[in-house]
Length: 146
Image (cartoon, rainbow, N blue to C red):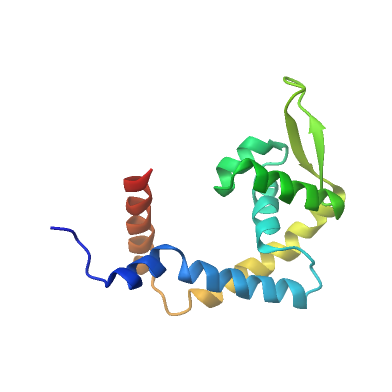
């Protein structure tokens, strides 16, 4: 017997990221108020480059769970606003490595401060134990469908 205590519609909206969408909308709003003209999708790419600069487009696809055309579009737009640039890989010239520009690096501190504040606001009243349970459950859902 399936372990589904939710109505199907409630479960679907939960799993598809109702909370994630709310956080993304709030983050986008605060970025705009702070005159940081990037989208949440662009932020997710920058976030991974701030953790490890010089990733390939395929590594960015894997890290952000996006397809190649989406990453290509995101990188194109980040290049247009001078936050990243493409460098040919030294090992394989057919592959581009995406690296942060100085402007992209300078944006990290402001964006991460906003992101941390937003996440703290979103998690207000949520205990550490509840967060651990949620992470465990969502990881299980992900692993089941991998």
